[in-house]
Length: 134
Image (cartoon, rainbow, N blue to C red; front, side, top):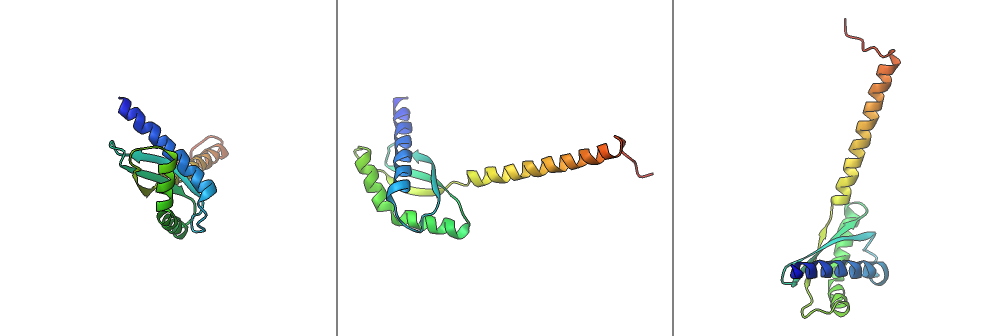
């Protein structure tokens, strides 16, 4: 149980440090509006997958991921300095599409609500009667 707790603490530390680096230290112009959403580490702490959410179109997402890949050495070195571990984990980036998915769900819910309001307005506009096609 304690090893799982340690992994979770390290994941959170890496997430915080990575967010700080994106905000203040990584100056690559290709990297747009990037947010670190999660970090997953293997049980042996040798690999870390950093999930990022990137705002923008497909081209902006591609450029931001390329910028992150080019800064990978710097990121790994900085994480090794800031978080004292016997081995600095190998880092990889993965695109987190959960924010896009939640935005899509929100749009669908708003569309359903508009359609429901439209139907209710049509029913109430007929004096509450639903006319059949006689």
